[in-house]
Amino acid sequence: MLILVSDAFDPGLPDKLAKFGEVTDDKGRIPEAEVILIRSKTKVTKEYIDGAPKLKLVIRGGVGLDNVDLEYAKEKGIIVHNTAAASSIAVAELAFALMIALPNHISRADQSMHAGEWLKKELKRTELYKKTLGVIGIGRIGAELAVRALAFGMKVIAYDPYVKEHEHAEMRADIKEVLKEADYVSMHLPLTDETKGMINKDLIQHFKDGAYLINTGRGKTVVEEDVVEALKSGKLAGFGNDVWYSDPPESTPLTDAPNVIMTPHIGASTKENLLRIGDIIEELIGEYVKNK
Image 1 (cartoon, rainbow, N blue to C red):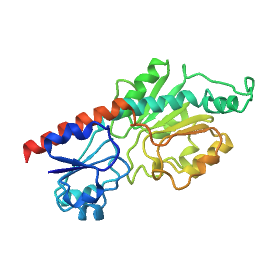
Image 2: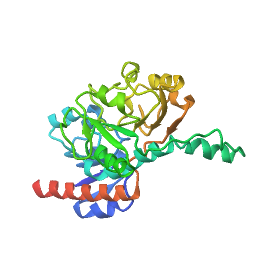
Image 3: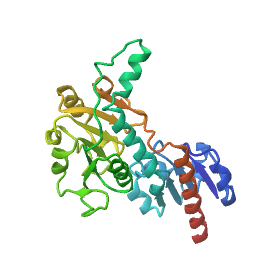
């Protein structure tokens, strides 16, 4: 069988998978592939699937599956898996890094020093200690973030329509209850019809004045133009963003907004996580071969 590695994975992965069949990164061989490994770049659309007549298994190295036409894949008898258990720590650590960097003005401080400026009096820091973190979507990643926030002495509250109780957070029944109380709001949502554009000008009105927003979930859960207006007005004190409408974004108003830290969708891109993803992929393909 042919295994196509369509996106960037750990360099050692092909050698690990060679025992199952031929492994290639040649996308010209999509019609021959029985197994295709993707991350966020490859879009497994209806047209893509129609161009892969031998395809039986798609594995997404990561969490979100919004780049796969799940309904059409099911119709064609194609098995689709993600590697959700692998990425939790990597993404949670980036979200926490953004939470630390924004109120400490790390980006601006570094840029000013490189420019020969000394902004000791201008850069006023605030602490995470005794602040409230609001987690929107407390799955694996949100839970890992909550653990780290508690270690810093923060209070953690959360909203998740599928979770009533959680050992690391005080659950709230309404997202607005979280927003009005949280000093920091961290988004960990999949992209669905319900979550698309969730953070918009109407919901932003319910944020606590001067709150910080972090998004390491899905870019389209946030209306960027509305966030920019909130940053300019001071309603939001800062925004840390790792996820985009497209990779890379064709354009974004965030580049000219105040107190924004932007990263190029690197939440899952740690060395350790790529190794964990590889281990899970090896297990999934092993199970697939066993059950053929």
